[in-house]
Amino acid sequence: MTLLRAIVSFSLIMAVVQTEPVLDSSYVAAVYEHNPILNPEPRVPLARTAALQHMQKNLDIYEEQAAEAARQGAQILVFPEDGLHGFNFSRSSISGYLETIPDPQQESWNPCTEPGKYNNTEVLQRLSCMARRNNLYLVANMPDLQPCPLKTDPASSCPSDGRWQFNTNVAFSSDGLLVARYHKQNLFYEESFDTPPQPEIITFDTPFAGRFGLIVCFDILFHEPTIALVKKGVRQLVFPTAWMNALPLLDSVQFHRALSLGANITVLAANLRHDRLNMRGSGIYTPFSATFHHAQRGDPEEGRLLVARVPVLDPERLEQRSATQEKEVMAESPTSTAADSGFCQDSCSDAPPPATASSALPSSATFTSSMIRDAFTFVLLNEAEGKLNVCNGTFCCHLQYRRSPHSGSKELYAFGAFAGTHTADGRWALQVCALVRCAGSDASSCGQEVEEAESKIDFLLEGKFETRHVYPSVLASKMVLEQPEHFEIAADGRVTLKHSNMTGGLVTACLYGRMYHLDNE
Image (cartoon, rainbow, N blue to C red; front, side):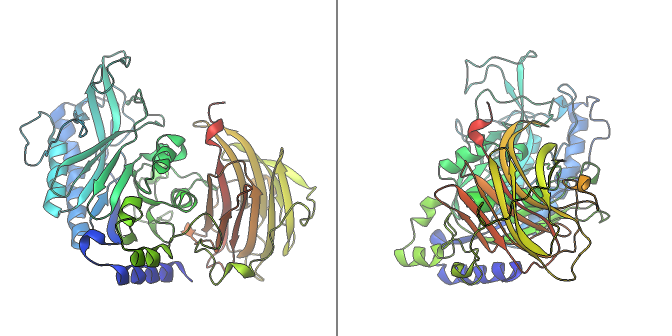
């Protein structure tokens, strides 16, 4: 079943079980990939009036996209991180862009209908009216200024300049009410912002889909807040991001989709489009479908609106259905077991036996190469088909593969394993099995960035992981996502990823295991 057919068939099934609006089993989501109008000199402080003039240009684009999303029936619209103000500010130069955002958990405020309640809140007012005018929930990202000490955390120590500055998501209801404010926990080279003194777990409720959780960009790689939200039963994440792609393992659409599959959640991912920093790739991801856009190098540098009907996953909302409705819908909902996953095209029973240490040939010709600055142990795929083992320390990965005849026969592929702590641009613990196309004909090129491939490979990839947080991805040529045929996390930690009949050449097939409990060791 192709991805398009999967999306269409799922939408048809969901339409069948819809009843009255309060019990709808699906909703329409939209994300906008924004090509921002940037401040050419972000290190130079601007007066409030000049900063507002800059942000109004981006808000004008947001207005157009909100109207178009509403025209297409969207009930929730997500804009990207840094989309209004940009990036590369210093702590002082961003001051003209800051607004003090009240805490919706402490007070109720509709900026559109009560504009005079707070000074210097022009951006909040315009976003609120945008949501109200278009009758949709709206999530945007903006810089927040808070007094010190914080009202919500009086004991927290103050920054040296006596104020808090946060990278912040704001969410508005369809009547313009400010319903959520979330301060980004995991900053990525953002000297203009502070890390909140305590991690925030922020959600908001909607009448059409129940509860959504808020995260920003780099947050998605860490336990707080992302996995903490999932553990609290939040299965729908809103994700503004300014994601710089990092192939072969952490391209935007690749990893955001992988988290959706591995955690069995919906991710509404709105990215920036900024080619100089390789920011591109947005999507609406559920455990059973992906609606995404990933511009190619050389494409016009422009925005893109994505709109899709997606299933409601909020557990409390699902409990509102009748037993019959729930049974029909949950038949489409994958779990962590293979038989129920929905990843098998026909049935799981005809899957080949998994490769194991005993059945795979010992792979002695291993070599080490850097992939995203981690030292992977690799073995080359030298035959048209075969079985391979590769180990990094005591962590081992197994591969059973068959290359399609006459498809990219000169392309070099390698199978790699890594277990350890990634320490470049952050620190997080990993166990990874990955099949990658090498950039050249020499083994030293394995692990480098590649965006295109011709070789179609049927494969079964397996590893025994010490974590249940394993995220699968199959990335084809020109950054096209393929829906894995089969993904299983067994009770003993064995994880398998199976795929065949690729529509394009294989760039990367990966099981990306996050060892959250080891991040601070």
